Amino acid sequence: ETGVTQTPRHLVMGMTNKKSLKCEQHLGHNAMYWYKQSAKKPLELMFVYNFKEQTENNSVPSRFSPECPNSSHLFLHLHTLQPEDSALYLCASSLAGGRDEQYFGPGTRLTVT
Amino acid sequence: QKEVEQNSGPLSVPEGAIASLNCTYSDRGSQSFFWYRQYSGKSPELIMSIYSNGDKEDGRFTAQLNKASQYVSLLIRDSQPSDSATYLCAVATNTDKLIFGTGTRLQVFP
Image (cartoon, rainbow over all chains, first blue to last red; front, side, top):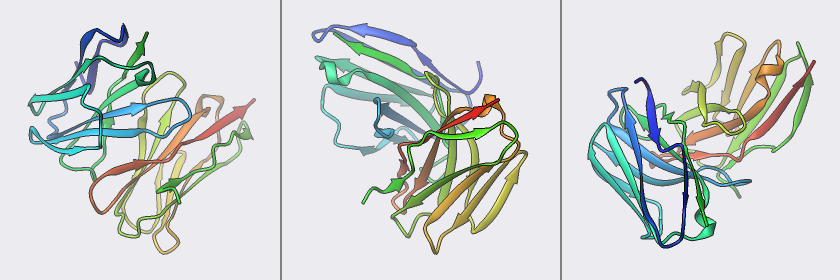
């Protein structure tokens, strides 16, 4: 595997379900990010982890819970989501901080029914 | 005022022409600037980064930065139909957050 991978690629879940998104980077980077992309809106930064420590939580509702066990893996745990949470969720990584080039995974297309 | 502004387009150019994509930003302390290409249904792909004033060329792509005017642009020479995509401008603020514009949709017609 190379670059940034994400699983699953597509996810349909009900509002009462609990699911997790997984991201793995094979670039030797130290910073990882979760973004949300909705139609007609710019990419929204959700969370930032630098050397496994969360350095940014962009006022994200608590129904989204990130986890970063090491610099290569990032999870987004989802529970009791709303239909407006349906979007493309993108993981990215960079060497260190936000000024470095960020590389994106293929994304998870999430639909909340 | 939006932090990073782009014209949503679509920008339509004929094959072989130069496509010019523009972006303005509001944070004067910004130091890093990026252009991403995003095909429909796909994730953003980094195509250019620029950090200092002036031009930076990579193949058919040229990024131009003018910090005094808070303006960054991307020129695509010899445009091809395969260049048709949405181009996202991203700016790293002085708090190390990467802020994206809404993107400009480019259409290259044969």
